Length: 89
Image (cartoon, rainbow, N blue to C red; front, top):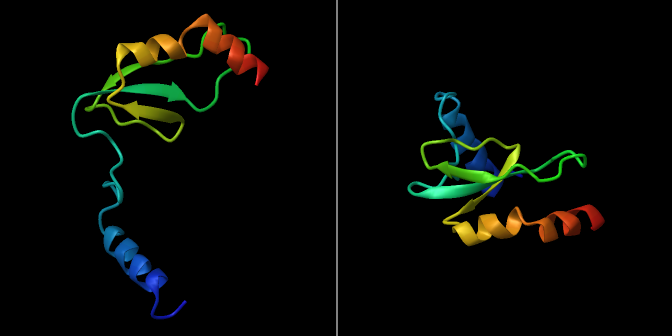
């Protein structure tokens, strides 16, 4: 599309091509901890590996993050009730 939004996005991407070691979009929490959950896990596991990470740790695209999560959220996600629900849905 000429003269539209795609041209502006393409120009922005072109400018970022000069900095291949930097992220074009930063979606990491800037401060505090976040909960990390893998996108894929084995059905043979009793529990899905879940945990807290600091904002200094960069999450990959293989995980989902929950910013500003509390211990309560970790408890729910690692509970046996949640694990049974994950296996049946």
